[in-house]
Length: 346
Image (cartoon, rainbow, N blue to C red; front, side):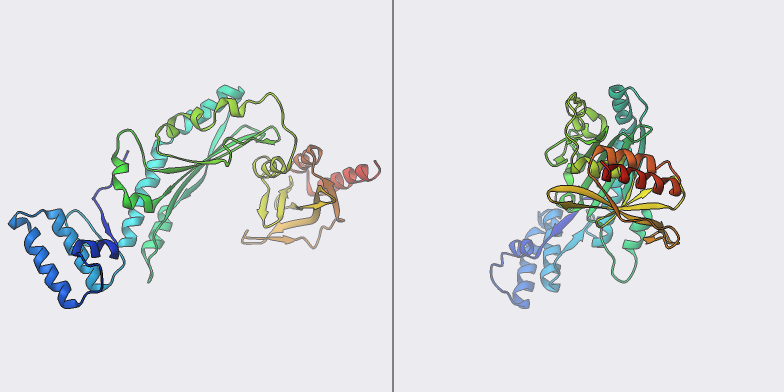
């Protein structure tokens, strides 16, 4: 595991007051007088320590300038607060990428389901361009969280697993020694998602947990226990399963309450949205959509139109959407209208 290149001292105004022994307000004259006294007592040349002297200097600068936070390195040099956080984020990001054994996860799922799985990096934050942008400009910004998300799926996306690792940088700036420990790593958030044969599978009660254990990187069974993902009894098809199917298998884009289901035709999508009526969940077909030239939002097509129809939230409707993904737009519209007439006519 990588560790911090330099030891950080991070001090607040409250900490600085404690160093100087100030419990109430103080004057500039009292601050200078106390500083000279503490410097004399703790100077390395007079038997004091370098660390104590550094703390005194940082506290003095904080109280003198009224600054909220000051950071220095082991050589006693002031460093840029934002850049230090961002440098730490890069170390953590690269560490997550290096240590997560993606092949071990793929092999684990393949051994259970007896079919090939493909791994895909879904998210890396921050990347180098984002770091560069944050360090520059009139008002530099700092990274507060690092994210590394990877998905594992079979050929037809009927089995999809996602692992997301996140690290809160502020915790590390306060407890830097965690990075260098031999048996633990830094505190990480572990996000999980599992979708198996039309059903969302809960791995933990909230699909999120915290850990400092290294086995998350190399032992998939500790994150996705076999007892959780191999279930002989198929649960009822509910909202969570439908939403998971749209995300993992259908790979529909979401914008607010709308989902855009891709057809087999380039840049042609069927817009759908969920609603409830008389206690029953329904999915409305809202029309044909296309992405704008920049690919940033969906626009309702003026050329292709279709009637407003709706389907109950069932696995049968999911099967229809599976077919829509492979059909041309014309055949998709025909299929939806045909299936709707079957429902209406009973």
